[in-house]
Image (tube, rainbow, N blue to C red; front, side):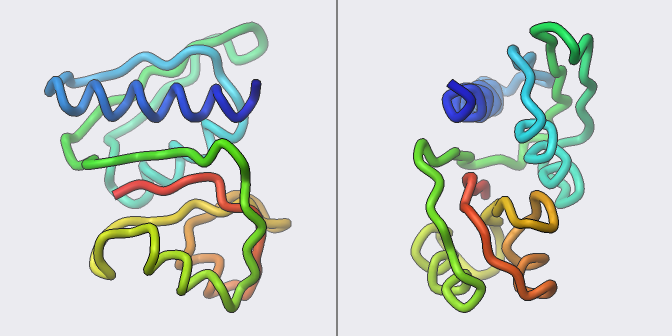
Length: 129
């Protein structure tokens, strides 16, 4: 169930972007989803997000910028070693100039550039561009 939550949330964001909405509301909440959105915010793909009542089912309100073309979560998380990260990004992302693969590592959830910098591997959660 936890992997479907992230996939449904990212699909909601992409559909809201395609309809030119200013915000999207995601429900239910998970910790991985908040980490994924934090990376998207840091990289400038979303403006901001707010978590409402995280102890129950909760909601996340995401303020959109209109920069997201596609955003996907993997239904099964693939293990990836640090020396295979570059090859994986070449396969999944359209170009080298933009887009990020999000990886869950022992050091936390981070994008592929940060994982290469810290020299760690992990499990691929998804990607966005």
